[in-house]
Amino acid sequence: MKAQLQKRFGRKRDQGFTLIELIVVMLIIAILTAVAVPRFAAMVQSAREAALKQDLQVMRQAISAYTMDKGKAPQSLDDLVQSGYLHSIPVDPMTHSANTWVTDTSDSLSYIEQSDGGIDNVHSGSDAIGSNGKPYSSW
Image (cartoon, rainbow, N blue to C red; front, side, top):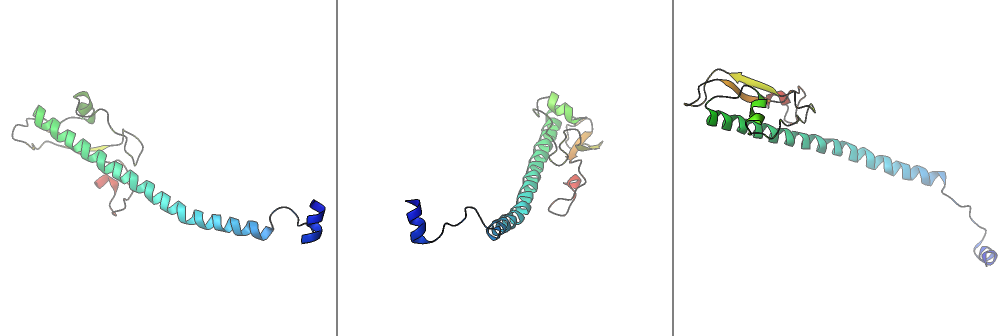
């Protein structure tokens, strides 16, 4: 049967792909990769920035709540964890460490009932520049 088909339709073509076909496929894959990788990297950076904004907001709210409730500002981020205002100190998404947060301390009193100064703000420990053109340490 096979021999009859070969006679009818011509000679048997070699099995496999030609070099041109392989090059075309590899070129298409390279073009798709060149488009996808930068977009993927931008999306990862955007997700890390969103996580940083959320972490900063949560910690700043915890600092404020601690100060209002206790009548004094926390002396360290660990005070927020020990008092139950934070479950744990979040990992800085830019430095991948929970120990790199930079805190601003002040002796000035934010509330009338506040008796002692302490931490009044927190920032990322990274000096990298964000998508808004400002360093993460100033967010």
